[in-house]
Length: 249
Image (cartoon, rainbow, N blue to C red):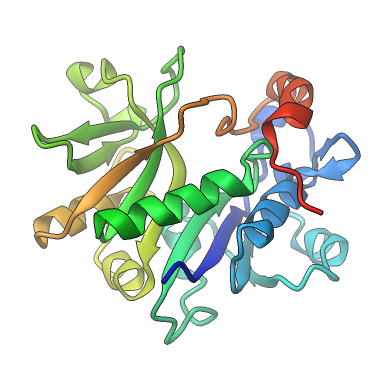
């Protein structure tokens, strides 16, 4: 019942890293950022790991050639929804779950992935979003819920109203989704937003419009799901790495 594939988004350049190096290739404690996401997915029991690459794609392929993952290139890069759609062929006919991860989450543990999948199955949701409550909200997509706690939509900060910006629960960019629905919903996503990109987050609202359940699974430690976007955040992550990861043999 808990079988899943992992899909890791790692195509970004990481402009705020102030480097020409693709974000996935920045080094933390001697290993590239992408290494940690792949290791966590595999330790959690992913049947297949698909990595979406873009900037410096060949370097990424070479560095991780012996990991057993499947690489899919996103070109051009038109948003997170477009990125996931590139994996449609790689996950064709897969009827299980897909856990969507980011390639810049080095503190994410395999235990958290396992708990997300377990929570998704127990709630019988179509989509489960991993959320958290960080002390600083700036830059994050907000999780909008109804009175019963169901997730109605995720609003990117640049598109959020002033009231929505006050919501303390944010999207980590990690999801557990039934695979057939994932690609069906992505086919309905448009780029009608301020960035003119195809947002993965739009599948949440699509599920709601179809009367399907979307739940939030809260990560209690916001540091564990902190994305690395700047050299300063990379430095912070190095201080937390030994204590926040579930080590595998």
